[in-house]
Image (cartoon, helix red, strand yellow):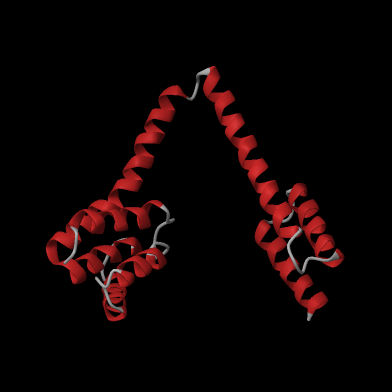
Amino acid sequence: MIDPLLYFLLFLKASLFSTGGFSNLPSLHQDLVNAQWASEADFGEAIAIGQISPGPNGLWTVSLGYIVYGFPGAGLALLAVTIPPMLVLAIAAGYERIAHLRWVAGLMRGVSLAVVGILLTVCWTILHGTGVDALGWVIAVVAFVLALSRRVPLIVILGLAGVAGYMLYR
């Protein structure tokens, strides 16, 4: 028996922590299969229907909702995947109204600095992990310098770092 509230919350969680398209698939797959509410075949069918249907890729979840729980499931899935973008729109509209205030600029600067601090912490943790040697540090520093120059696109830097890693560590 499917609990409608839990069903909705699983779809909402997957939608809140995804970037659109099929990025909510792993979360939904894990949650719905573990609860024994959906099977592998249900996911395959939902994705196929989503691909041949017009509209955004993220709406495959509505097909999944219908396959697993009928019309209530489709409605709950649609509501769950609609709430996060509406939340972003509401936040953006509110931000437009207060963006000119002095304290908002300070708040945004503080948040930006916190993000930089978290990013540096993640980089530090990765670089001090097992398997990172002097050559790894060289690749990281060169990539960092190239990124600071802003003359080389990030995708090119990633490609060059990948090639360098392959050539040095094969």
